[in-house]
Structure formats: structure tokens, C-alpha cells
Image (cartoon, rainbow, N blue to C red):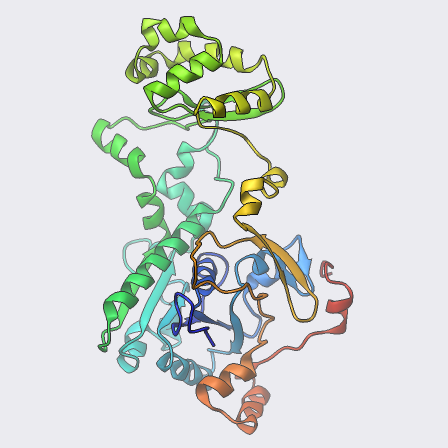
Length: 415
């Protein structure tokens, strides 16, 4: 049960989602203290089996987005399984799912039917294209919506082909927007029986994240090209090669521009009328960038980082992940967490970015498939052992137990 001192104390979430968008959302809410019950089919969330890395039976992919949850296995293809889910929904605040629209219709578990019996429930659906529209029933994953949204067309070398973003922003964006929508629905629900339906489309989220690029096109009718390593509006918001590593600078103000030229010993460039204002620099960026690049190439990255920071010009080395995850600021902010299970399994994961003086919980290891089936049925539905055993024998629910080889070989890869 949730600690009553946490930010989301007393909020119970039934998580029917799989893969990334939904689990990322519910992990965030679990980090804030919500009680998250992960409802899985008998074969589990398919990300449990994604290569290449495993801890015991579960993939590192699965473990990266399922901490602070409990797992119960229910076969929703059985009528008794659907009855159990409805009983759990009556005792919950939120149900989140990311089935393709129409799948739950075939199981007779639609949002409207459930909300009719659970009037305070917030039902959140995440799908590729939303619950309506011509693409409603099409399958979609992260790269599909990156491509359709136009965001992928902005990513990559200026003269090259479109490139998928290095992080799954289609899934993660939908997860974040889902968390915002759910929290708003819970806040507006108050004490009355006024549940809500939240409809999150991954494509909608990606279009929203086009932000000023969408506005630029709608204003100018100019189709933007891949952005490469620079900014569409600010030429000194850019990436440069030093004598050893790439660095990025974001000299966005006139004061920063002057300081940048001083550090690079480019007084003649600072006085050149072609570069007098940001508008001038934007207009003449093809002449400016090579001048800056030649200066940066003369010394190593650590020299420029030190000098530019001293001059209050934002600068950073382009870290690889080994450097990023050991960066002093990242470590200080506890953005790398090692979670240890009771049986000794452990996993290093990215931490919770939301900091608060109180109200957060200590990370709990992601659950095994069906690890809490018996516990949840006892606690929430007050079922006795005889009834639970009957449900287990019928295959309506399932549970799992630790296996000796999991403990002996914690980083094996399944055959």
C-alpha cells in the first residue's frame, strides 16, 4: 500500500499497459507514491523478453520502466478474469491501457461499460492515433509517430536523410502527457462521482512537440529541413569540433555573443557589420560558422569549456552515455539509481527527475510476472486462499516464484 506521506498517497492505479508509453507514465506516478498494480496477461508484458540484456528472466528494457509497481496476472480472455478486473477497478482511482482501439471492445471491457459501474474511475487510453479518426485502428510504435509527425524530418544532418531520435520520444512524450492528463483528471474529480476518460494519441503528442517549428511553417509555408547540429533561429546555438571532442554552445544573447568572441580571440569578427546583431548573424551564418569552427579547432574541449563557463557562455561537451551517467551533476542529483531486490537481483536505472523535500518513495525493484497476484487478491478483494487456489487452477490468474538459477546467475541472457 502507498505510504500516506507521499505526494500521491492513496491513489491506486491499475496499469494494463505494455511496452513503453504506459509503463513510463505509471512508473513516474509510482515514483510519486501512487500504488501501481501492473495487470499482465499470462505471458506477461512482452518487453520482459526483449534482448540483449537480462537480469534473471526479465529484460533490462522491462526493468528500466517498471519499478515501484506490483504485478498480478489475469487472463482477460476469461469471463472470470474480466470480473476480477472490474472488481479491482471499483477499488481503484485510475485505469490506464494502451491496447489498439477496438481490442477491449471484443473483450466487452470498454471504458463506457466499466465507468458505468465505476463512476469515480479515471480511464486513460494511450494509442498510436487516438480513439477516433481515419488512422484509429492502425498499429503504431515510437518510430511510426516520429515519422508521421514530421519530427523525424527535422532530425539528422542538414544534407542527409531523416534520422530517428536517439531516445524514444514518441513513447516517452505520450507517457508524460498521459501523466499530466491523469493528474488533472484526478484533481478535477473532487469528491463527486465524476470519472473521466483521457484519450492520448502518440501522434498528437508528437505534433504538439513540434512547437515553434510548426508555427514557423504555418506562418511562412517554408518546409524546414533537417536541423543537423544547429538551431534554426540562432547561429551561435551550435556544435563545434575542438581538437579532441565536440562541444555545444548556446550564445543566445548579445552579451554572450560578445563574450564568445572575446574567449575565441575573434575581435575582428565581433566588429564585422555582417555579424552585428542576431538577425545579421542569421542572415550571414554560412560565413560566420566556419570562422567560429576554425577557432574552436585550435584547442581541446576542456580548455573551451573552462574559458566559456568563466565568461558565462553556456557550453558543454557532447557526452557519450558512459560520461553522462558519471557526470558529477548527474550523480549529485541522484539521476542514476541502483535498485536491489530482496533476493539479491540488482539493476542500475535512470532516476526520478522530480525532486521534493518530502513525498517521494525509495525505489522498489520491478516485480516478477505475477509476483503479487495472491497478495493483491487478498488485500483488495479479500479473497481467501481456497478461492485464489481455484482461480489459479482454472488459469484465470497466475503467480510466479523465484527460481534458483535466477539468483545464481543474475546477468544471464535467456537461450
